[in-house]
Image (tube, rainbow, N blue to C red; front, side, top):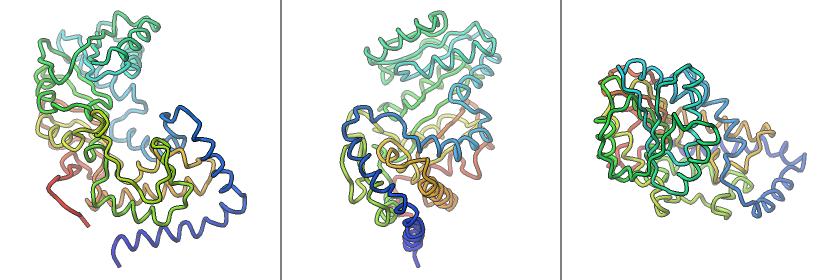
Length: 355
């Protein structure tokens, strides 16, 4: 029996065992009504509740263990604090692709709470609309002495000053000139500096790789229809659509190149990778179909996480997202989850199916 046949039987058995419980309380009909009602909801970009269930149960303990932090602000602020202490007079920090600076504002506040006062967090962003929102938010929080906004196309950036730390929060997968940008970040960092990022490292356009798609298709065939409404696209997907987001702007334009290039350019102090299968079901497109108040929905997500982990352990599935703290120094033993090192998590683009 093939791996796919085994997964198909597991999924079929899972839904066979839970079907009665979900039918008896008539929740299926209520969910269908909610699905129809949701067509009229304008804001579908908020992370679904099932994502928070999944991240708190499965991701947070790994973040605590590998990185030693519990929040996104601390993920950036703690390495920045260490770098500022070691940087010998360099007090500037940098965020590339800062957007509306909501994350950067949180980082600046944490640094202030740590007692760090003599720093500037420079925020590079191209969009004038996002910069306008960022300016208002910085002013509202009285952070003008600490958070500095700079309009710039990062693809054309030539560093002219040094930084103790650089951050990129879900920005790298929008960049085209990755080689140039990573070289510029390395050049701009002081010797003791850190490069910290939380970003996507899966297939370009956030598509699934062929070997992952086979597992998802097998799951999809047995999954109840109420889970198959794509809330972002506003359509029901009888079959899973392996959508290429890079057709719209620069979303995921070179996602698959990020990790291999980082491996060539930096050393990793700590690295946490995850995703591949389960993220399809907890993210914005389909995650809103799941209800964390239902034990059956939570059990299905838990099942997918275990499946994702086992396939990653076997190097069949490669992760799609990372948290990484990097330096200019080579490090042969970074802190990682299990044996999922930065090199092991690369997905070679010249491979076909990995089954």
